[in-house]
Length: 322
Image 1 (cartoon, rainbow, N blue to C red):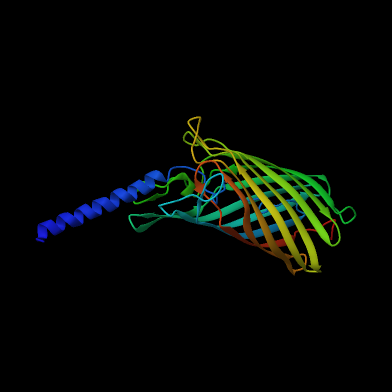
Image 2: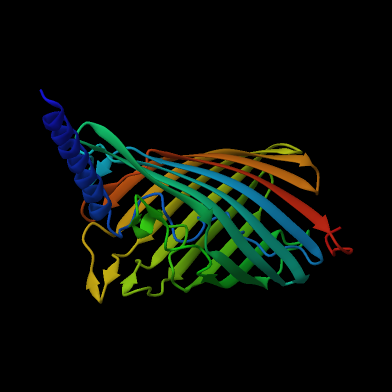
């Protein structure tokens, strides 16, 4: 083959590869992903009111893995072999202002990667950066104490669009699900109930997020719920069992429903809680296994999630529960 023909073949191959790559970016339109929640999952945000004059500082690591395309009834064929890995480190702050009221903030940093096979090649699209910050206020309707071991609290918050929405790769704007932020102001309300017994504590909580619109696109409203039981194995060690669920409505673009969005998922989450330093430092580890997944259209399902966290409690003044 002469040199001019070889050059033509190389240019043709390069053009084909570029066209395939652009097709990947084009088909990865804004849509929900099983592991790309708009707000931190139930439990990260806190389910009880912080003790008065105590600052709780939480550091959370989440690894969310997806390897299989699914629909309403189970796995479906996926010639592109789509898979994703979401990682997130979240800093949470919560301060008990008065016995029944606490203020909090959630500050996430995210790493997102989605890979598809195109013409025998794996094409990975990725981004990282500071996500959307959430500010929360929580009020106790029934105040917790060493006498009643019970608390009923309500919360409200706002997710502020601090994360980037303009990340590019290969000079092309990444799909919204791969952006660190959603671009919208979202508003949330929550309800949580805690009941302490010996040797088991129970938590029941739910959070509803009403999403806003950004550039004519609106992610589906989100309901998350959790039922948690802590079994006290030792003075400093708890065995934790948790059922968590997530219900997402369909996304909308310019007022119309978006295909392949909307889902309901339920996970079983066994874990451990260790009082590493009594009063001051708690460590948690959870492994989340999906029990139920129902998708509207074709979406990536959840393989498993791994969550690790450490919570530091710093008394800034004497507390009534000291």
